[in-house]
Structures are given as structure tokens and as C-alpha cells.
Length: 130
Image 1 (cartoon, rainbow, N blue to C red):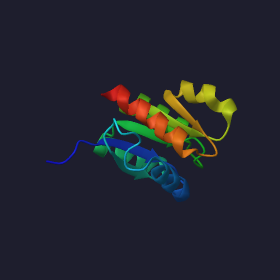
Image 2: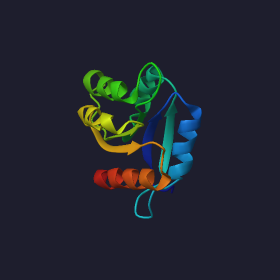
Image 3: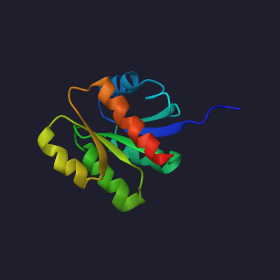
């Protein structure tokens, strides 16, 4: 029997940023939470498709993505696809934290990405699901 996992949609148009998030968090953000199954999307349209097909439990969205940022993707998923999943937003500008909250973020992680901060944020969100 396989171990329980938690599915996380990671949206960023930057492959290096997606890799930094996945490598920074690792397979399991904390000992007391299940491992993560990462579902990646490089475009807003791709994020919607992955969301509809896979129904991830958590959304990690890059607010700095070009053309359509993570905050816009969060609002679209909430307003047009009935998303209720917790959102972790990655943002480079602390002054955007209020916008991140407006977009439904339960956790905000700033730049430069700190692996420990990312692990702790995801662990808190996963614990909230269980």
C-alpha cells in the first residue's frame, strides 16, 4: 500500500523558479506531514487545466509570472472554477501582500525564496487540511 500524499499545483512561467520551489521544499516539508505530489503548470491556461483535471489540494502560485500572475490565477480559479483550496503565493514585493490576501492567500512567501520559509508555509497549510 502506498503512502498518502498531498497534491500541490505549482504555477510559474519560470522553470527555474518551479525547480527552486520543488527542490527547496523537497519531498516532504516536515516529518509530521505526508509527502507532496507536485503538479506543474507553466501558463495560466495550463494551471486551469491541471486544476480541473487533477483537483489539487493546495495551490502554490507565482505572483511574478509574466502575462498572468499568480494572484489573477487564484481569483480566476476561485470565481470561475469554484476553487476553495488554500493558496500559497510567491511574491517579490512585500507591498503586494495585501493583494495576495485579497486573492485568497493563506500564506505568502517572499523573494528571494527561502527554502525553510517555504517548507514551514507548506507544512502549516498541509496540517490545516488534516
